[in-house]
Image 1 (cartoon, rainbow, N blue to C red):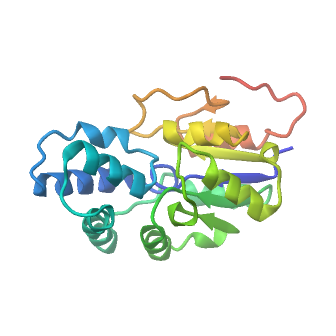
Image 2: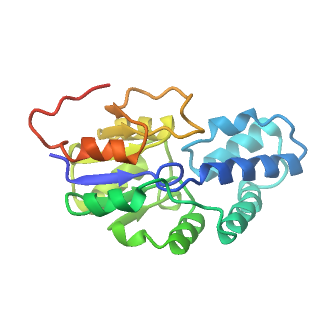
Length: 222
């Protein structure tokens, strides 16, 4: 029986991917990089790992921490300017789900960014626990973030379901032994997802599945 829903944050609860993508490109451009193809490989990755990858492959100067902090300034500025939007029907869906499951967030984002986004948009009260990239050694696609969430609720992975917008997140959830629903967004819809249990277009479609997920005759479809 599914008792806990674990939501990714960026690109799933909030439409932050455009902000992240543009901030990454602005950051790379300021460092003399003209080929932005590496940006597509960063979805769902822990920030430290993403910047270690960029530093290594693009020969960026500075420490990973320095590079990451420089990029984060662009993101925080966009957040403050009100550019971060909630995904369609988010609060409507959460209002229904909070009466049926425990709700949590399992995100690779840095705590400073997650806290700012939640504070500005005022919907953190839906979630009993929040685990972010700062809380683990290894981010997605490793399962650590999701396993830490389950541990906080004292639940087995089989009692948890993860909602994700990125292939790395789905892979992390599968490695954790959890059921998965993929909800690709505009930036991830053309990427290959590693066999989620369900794949839907938006949160309202996910709600239809979740309202029946514990029915004994529920059919699992790839």
